[in-house]
Length: 268
Image (cartoon, rainbow, N blue to C red; front, side):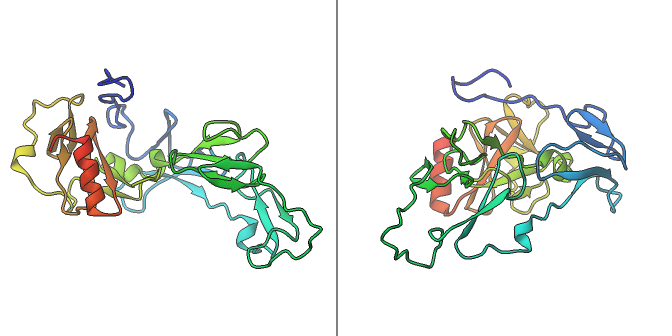
């Protein structure tokens, strides 16, 4: 991270590419370690199992890390009426089921002697019970499970989401593509690549060779200084040069919201 523009946000990042580190496309790279095709890769995360470095079927694409798909029991046995799944932040699948007469979306409790259970956790106006998953609108990259120790998105029983871009999307990264995020989400939903038809060609944004990675964002031969934006044909998408050397591309629900966000973060 380079010199900051203000006390909150960095002005740019310094990133070393696999090419700069000498990682061949015929090998895999994870956690600063190079793995050869056929080797097991210790990918972190409760839902990552049996990961290996595999050669691409298309020789034009780099080798990539592939992991087994974890199939949870709930996929094969749907919950019974009046039951709910309980989770742990350390486990991929549900750890148990809780069943009682009160946990039902369709039935009305008619027993006047029954005391309704109060919620165990509260967040952003919603109530949760022990073992419920909790996601956050204001912290989309955090995930928690309701527990007796729950204090918020960065407290106990919480973890940061892993988008797995380092290995799952290696093909896009080595091709110089930019992740496209949907507004309010953590992980990219698509990618914008140097030859993407979404990018509007602009002769004033062609690289001249004197740009620096700390002051300009680059995609292919197109560059823009910090505080400006890449021009695209989709008015829902804006790609601002906020923290060089990469553009930050976000897709919004409406063109009006996208334009407002663009005006707030750039000098049009």
